Length: 140
Image 1 (tube, rainbow, N blue to C red):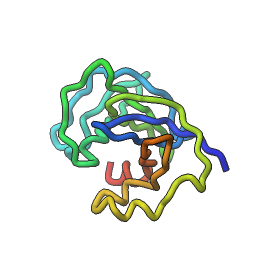
Image 2: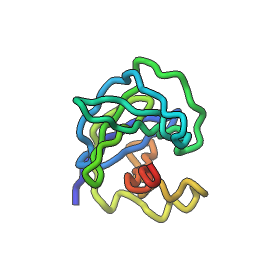
Image 3: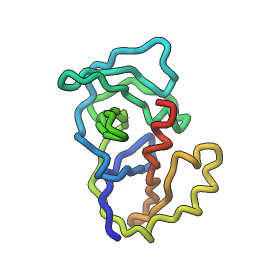
């Protein structure tokens, strides 16, 4: 079955999440820090009267935190009737993949972060890590 994904970049890697989880993609805006939040929660922002937590995907994968730039985007997703913002380096493209193109067994080589990844797909000469939204949001 063909599914669509939003492709984005972190550091030098390519990642994707299912487009059916995405509400919208917005430019990075000012985020209010929450002192007692876990390290991967960058803070919260007000979006049309709704306060949503912003999760930095860099932190979830153990990548160093960087100062936001004009390229940063927040992918607003809906999961279990709640909205969350995923802070990514940049949004790249809309990708269509057949389910069999995503290799789930390949995630074993990712070590402790394997639970965050649904599978790995080959797109052209690049590898694309397809993320598991439920695991990314676990404990959020």
